[in-house]
Length: 272
Image (tube, rainbow, N blue to C red; front, side, top):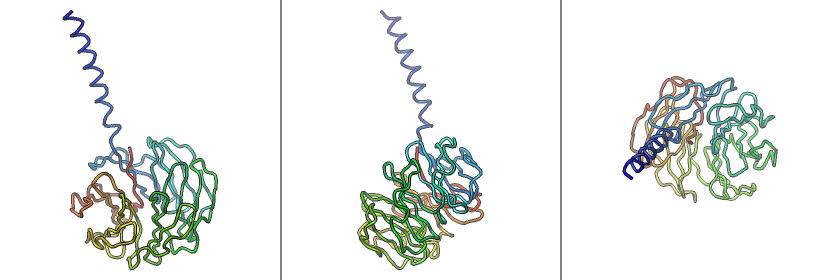
């Protein structure tokens, strides 16, 4: 009985090694819009593919939903759909937009901030238009995030953040004010983090509008996109010679140049 037992353990060892060998593919990856492409990196800063997706038209907004990537092309007014492995699903899933910027996904719904139109539109993840003007009269809407049944919308032009329901009803047109060129937003529970391009800072606020720390992180250069993964924030900085810096949610600097040598990077997303 000894030999069969050893053989079983040998097989289990092989199976365990195979499963362990697949674990890196399940690790989190950073996806960043890099002008005409999407780059993919590990959360430790290693380059997976600097041009995972090519042929884009000023890629800004980016969202991960499972194994799918949704990418906003600001210059040609489209949203493209791809797999996280870089395979093209539909380069023009949604078209006719005006300066699409931030994207937020909730179930089978996409919410897109149209910077030049001053609107937020709602679409299905299959590309069907639900309401192209779900929210209007905004001031350069840029970043957008879903919080339960609500939307947080960053208004770059007015330096404010508004709060709305996912059905478009206004809850607080000015939930947070006095920001300096806000762009990206990342939500964690009942709080969110916002990049302030003009001030070179990241601010922290509650979803009810309370200021937690107006300057959680300071001294940044052109902070733009921001993404949250576990206890860390990944922040895009500098339009040319761009970087992604890593900071803790308490404001501690981990690596201000985790990823470097990007070209005109925009928004950033983290997913598996």
